[in-house]
Picture: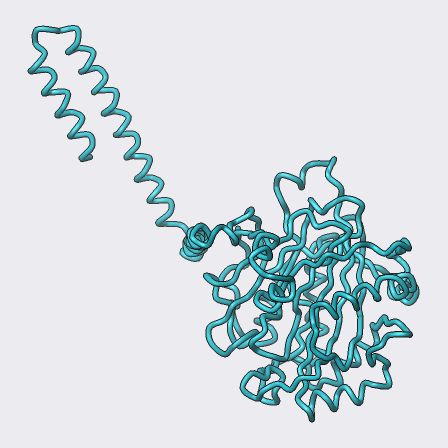
Length: 410
């Protein structure tokens, strides 16, 4: 309104000062009228936009504000964490799980929304090595050239013989501290055209599943009553080299349990995710939520701080790289329990010429020769427990999966 008054005032002054030039005055008056009309329309549009935003859900407004704030923070941090793209993130299954198990009505403030996705490669460039990146953020990408012997990813024996030695090299690189136990378990081939494999096929062949499009964590370790329950699941799904230099046999389970319970040894679960296609991943890439909490708390006792936690992806991951991220760490100070999912990139999802994603993920259970302090122990006897029993939890997860449209990633 103030701008319109100024423009009209200048037009009136021109009319009085230019009486000797009627043509000039007429042109000026016409231009002023057009400008005034344009400004009126602009103000109307701005008022309408403000009304729409004011009436929008407050959570969505807050989320967009957070994304804008993160973008501003990234700009002032040498762009190491600049937003790479945006994607829709579906938190619905995670919220349902946490509500059913821990009676938290809305762990994440929304069931789905558009989130800023940051470039993990650019972030990692700011660290001296991938070990520092993993320690600070709970995720990293590691160079891992494919073995000279071709791996048949659909055969468990081939993975056991040729791929696990490569993973052991990565683990030794990432964790120079002494490891007293290592088990690999639950290998899974994922792809947009794959379906969940039948149980009888999993004894000799690698299990298969569709891409995981819903936000999830792989294992809620703290929910188990005893560490022996966790070790039993790992042992039932274990895939291990016979000549491994680290204790990993099923007969060692009692010793491992004793080390964890009596000696308070630190243990962790990490996921190793690899592109097994011939071309870099450009469809349905893996995205990982690097979580930050307020004070000495972690999942499930607190939700991540939205302003400090960020979604990352590693663009164009190749078959000669492995993405490593924490799924659990007994040490509270280590970023872990990283939520993750496959995301859709609008520029690639509708392009039939872009290769569909094929990947393999496998988990590692690691026990370190390191005692955890009682102040930072997430597996203490007084940790938060779910209200559902193990059997009830299994039924819930089955029911939750059945509700999803068949063919969608879980």
